[in-house]
Image 1: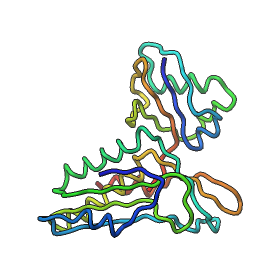
Image 2: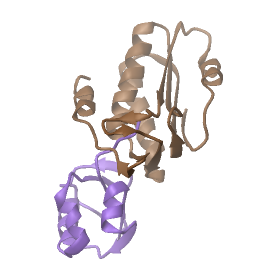
Image 3: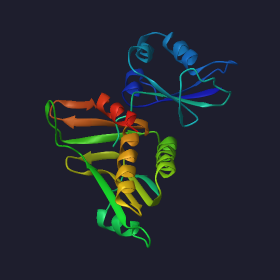
Image 4: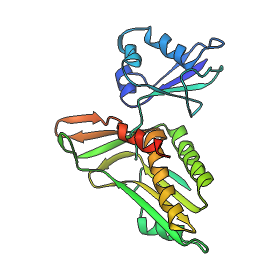
Amino acid sequence: MIKIVFFAQLRERLECEQIQWDYVQGITAAHLKSQLSAQGGNWLALEESDVLCAINHEISALETIINDNDEVAFFPPVTGG
Amino acid sequence: MISVQQQDFDCGHEYQQLREQGQGAIVTFVGLVRDFNQEGQIKGLHLEHYPQMTERALEQIVEQARQRWPLGKVRVIHRVGDLDGGDQIVFVGVASEHRDAAFSAAQFIMDYLKTQAPIWKKERSDIGEQWVASKSSDNDAVKKW
């Protein structure tokens, strides 16, 4: 399984903080994002705006391959400081 | 040392902690909650973050700064949760033998923090709550390093 977490306006638009997702060998963060948005409805928010990705708490490119039991985060560009 | 915390910080105390023998310069920066934006008055902010990731991201930024400049103590504090206009948000303090390194490292840490640390601001105003949009000028600031 993959644990997926969402933050800030993306979390609010999806009305979802975290979900578990079936792991498929060789899947990238970009594939995962497409699978999620293919659910339609609120999930289309993943395609409508700038979305960054972190894998196991490291900012990662969307092309990065995910391993089983990874934690994947999707979030909007950061605005701290 | 890195702290991500709800409570306020005392700049005087943090400055004293940065003082040590052999270091001739300390540069500190404090970021505050602005009480206005383009639409008008801001009452305050809510800062959301990614708890397991924020400290680690800040540590990596400080580590990158240490690879570029000879630094002594470095202190970064970022507050999260609900803040009011004028409240302190972020503290960056850098000690070094010479001022050039201390100035540059403090600015480097702030520039990277604004584009790499998983923290998001939501503003509270009379018209409601609104997530702050990221600024292209912040991305440009990082490119100069």
